[in-house]
Image 1 (tube, helix red, strand yellow):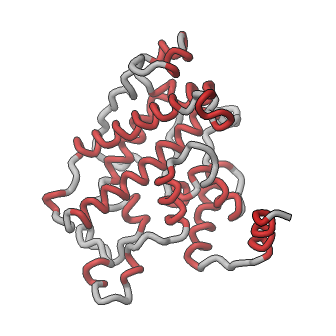
Image 2 (cartoon, rainbow, N blue to C red):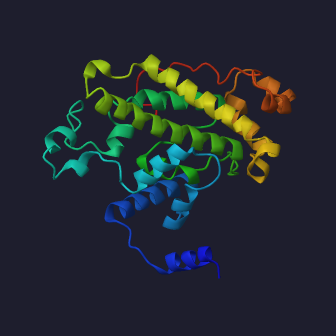
Image 3 (spheres, rainbow, N blue to C red):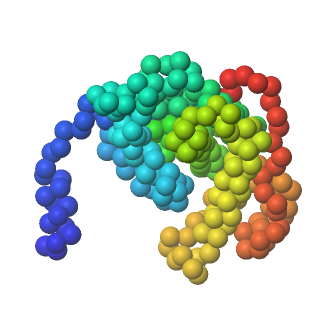
Length: 273
């Protein structure tokens, strides 16, 4: 028996009860995924999903892990401190407790409304319905599925949806921290829609380029992404997608063939999650 296998055996034998807030988040996640896929995953499947492949970036994996564990230091985490009056509420929205749900889906200062509008506009070119975004679906995004009208899982759109939702949630968190901590909550320094859109375009185009690079089997061997999956992920949202139909290998192996995602459609103000 190797040291590694011994450690795994000891770890498997040692039962650790999840924290109450963690278990509540896992239950919320399982319920959201049951609504999305018709299957209710167990806690182990939810945790393991965060480790899979190159769909989530390392920073996004950490963000989602902390989200499931309720480990972000917001809201109730400040309750029994001397600065609770300053850090526990969202004074911009006049909410007593700034929760992650509030930040990601409700706050008027975090940029969430505009980020979700951009994510949905990016998705629009797939001509597929945009699923309802809840805190449970965000936490369990790596198990979310996009299906055809016949009920078949669509691998490309499923991967695209997972990327868009995970990147949107992480961007909202960063925008909130930039404003609340970096700008000390100065309402004059809330991120403008044009700034948010520029950040979003950069994020998505960076992900496209990373995917292209990761298809190089000579450099990444067995860890390389399958070319067909990368094309299926991005094809519908890219500018000049007819070129991908004709020359998919050229797009994957040469930079500059495409300039990035299509210009986004500007929707009317409103709830677009």
